[in-house]
Length: 258
Image 1 (tube, rainbow, N blue to C red):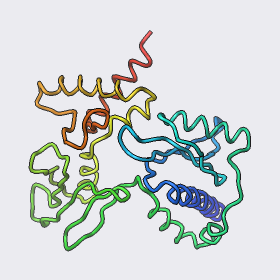
Image 2 (cartoon, rainbow, N blue to C red):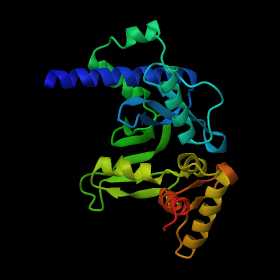
Image 3 (cartoon, one colour):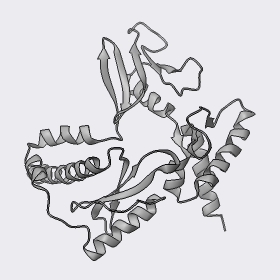
């Protein structure tokens, strides 16, 4: 049984490494991969996002080594529908390039490391000096964590992020490095365009809802919109707490109670 499990894991790794390598060779900004499966549960590929803000597009890659062509889609569900159609018509199947055949022959441990390097979505702590870590998601810098010593009763790990609620950027103090890492990641804002792409609604509608939440939360001295010169209009970003509230409001609107 253990041998079968190890073989299954290796096959999963080979499939994912091949898909991610193909995608990143063609779309260097690809991120937010999500698996796509048939109704009976078989994995057929991944949808992913290229670019950022209101100009981002959704695309797909199949488990049979094909990347969807064209200009991409406004919404993730459209990319997934296109992938399902390609699978149904046999358009998602092509021989594996020779350079990938050689890559996938690497030992399983090497494939694990390769997959981690290709993963643009997982948050990790990168040591950058004694008692200091950069918190990153793929190649994106999210913030830092400093070890202030075990005697710090408030928590030895001081977490900082550029989008923290506090003006000095302090996210908080934690007794565990993983908790500090996760807190930094939670401080990173969410694009209104990403919420639109996930829910399948116009970006303008998401922005309108975000502004409503921002006004409501302002009475409690909490912010929803992240206000910067770079992130305005349809390229606006919101806090992760606000993103949850926006999703709740929009989902309720899409599926009203009967």
